[in-house]
Image (cartoon, rainbow over all chains, first blue to last red; front, side):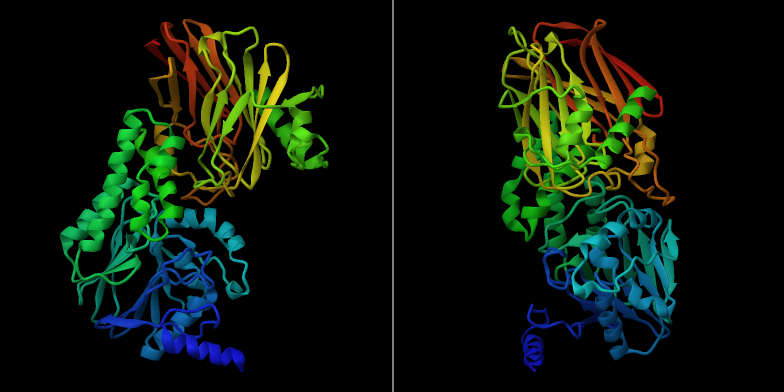
Length: 303
Length: 265
């Protein structure tokens, strides 16, 4: 009884989840016609009690549903599926994995019975093989029981158009940016870009692909001037201000690290000293920023 | 060449075979150290735990596949007793001996830095062999995990394209010339998976670096899979030396890369 009270209290007061209650539903908002959005908690996936830190979207057409990212656990995947079923009984034909990080893909198992196409970047498969098992060893709490590595069925080398029934969407295949294997999804009807982790809002950007490539990609997104952008972390954007801030961080990272390399500052000093003032401008930069400096340094020292 | 490979393989097996408990005070309570010590120094010499070297490592690695390590040498290379070799060890790695650097009077100071993989929370050790035959060790502890099996930071496609390219940089630091040798090489550990084919990538790593100045040995390195991809070695050169610096780099697949630079330190 006590637990039930806590659960109700949690849901009546906040769409986010508090530690006291095991989540039993996810709060999806319809942010545009037929576009549903779950905003994750801005937190480190391994330090958040249920790991529901990544944003998730689903889009409903006249004939089918596409899910873009699936969360960090089988259980979260099941909650996403339940949220879809509250909206529509149409078949779930596509599960799109924007990149391999564990907070975005480990709900895939909840959709296997729907027999969707699992779409991912051509370089995704090997990354999943390299990391999947390691990720699972990190997800040991009872909440993650049943979580499994589900491989992509369709590996994309170039953009693909999918039709959900009177609703065309383009799955974009990106060059090295946030990772080596990023996808984003564009919904033509509502001029909405589901950006995955190409866009970080409030949450410190995390660099794994290419700092220069990521800056280019963000510039393209800004120039396209979408009506709406759904980031991988943080709230929905209807203008480019947050993206410009993220691009500014990455441009400063690139120029600061280039200058450090030019004056022969070693990697250790660079990672301990550069741009520490940025840490306060973002959530979680105290843990992500140092790694970003190392990534940028090892990329740029060879140019 | 084959000998080096065999030696490291042997070292791995030795470690799995005997995880004895540590009574040696210099071991800093690591269960792996006694076996590593026996493999590195079979004659069981005394190892002095002191501050002849200062080891600079992050307490927690931001990226376990690229952990910067700096060894400062607190004696001068021109004195009666100087440092002939520096061994780097990461106790908890599958191949714990990162490698051995051999130094020369050209270096002025035996300090050096490189980047290593750290596979689990581990003691990291730097051991100096001095010209009077003594061994001096300093030990740090680094929190990191998964560094040996982490996918390559650049990607496989790019790594294969640039394999064997080298760069040399230099700057003045406190009266000495600091030199950085950068080698483009994926340094596959044998514990990583190919990003496209999903097969295990066989080990393929730089195991020998020989640097000479007008054919006189300056610095050499022999090592294994614990060095990060695109190996980087920073070391010192005595000012006033000049000539042709030649690098000969070999990897575990018997490839050889050579490059030379006219230098003035």
